[in-house]
Image (cartoon, rainbow, N blue to C red):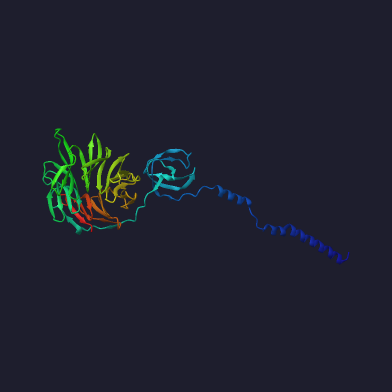
Length: 444
């Protein structure tokens, strides 16, 4: 074979080798780079979308403070088939743990309660605790605005103010009597001068109500206590219901007088209408106390379970209701003639966890008045846009419009028994040894 034949045979073999290489390797590499659809992944995604639960609720956040709106069963996990661990009462405070879970067509939350068992409950039974407002501005004590109303060294208590008149219980004669001071004339007068004890006065306009303790003529060695009405215009007094025996805690606003009457161990709250000289029973319980009235609204406290709770009554609507459930204890209420109720409340069992709350009867809304917890506030009072109270022996004022708090006193002795009407705020003050004087602060 000549050289040309050999070259031809070599060329043919080379072409065959190149064909095999492209068919088995290069082409295969190009083919493998072509995009493809993974049907198994796409099918799985569609299946998950079709069967997923509704969106997880974001009504609450992890570690948010909440409370129960009513008594509820607590479960070991989400779902109606989960084990019931027990129950938690209405108003119980708790903290949200983790995120919500959807099961059995119900949104569930895991709660850490302050007391008792922890566990899961439906979202419908959980309420938010209104956030604590930004810390209020506290204005330091300034004694220049004080006015000392009384000067004689003696013991005074239970002051009440209405317009330009102040009344109080006074022991200067050795027997408790009712005195009055006129801010315009600056004159003081003694309203009662009998042989009996006259205490707990309350004033509204030209009328003063008070409690008189006197011997029971039909039961030797025993006393009776009756609510009396003193008419400043007529300069005369009379018992409201002379047939009664054991009355207490009178308060007056306009033509309405409220008081408690005790019989057979039960206390009944009565409303007396001065314009019609009729009375009606509002509530009965063994523990009714701390009556207050303003305009058409009455407030008091009563025991529920092992805690005090605040109740209200709308005179025009004839409706009784309990003020909010979420605090463990509610005491020392006061009410304005616009239906704003203030009270001291605790959110936990701590002795220093007291706050002042405001509840609006008309709008059914609630808010904090004081941002920081502290010792128990007492002698709460409210008029117009001003709230006042005593705490740790000092007097404080809160302006609802400006949301500012003022400490009115910072002295030796102790202060309390706050009463407020319009822009005039009064209290009893023991800064002078051997006396308990009445001081006034004009807010305006």
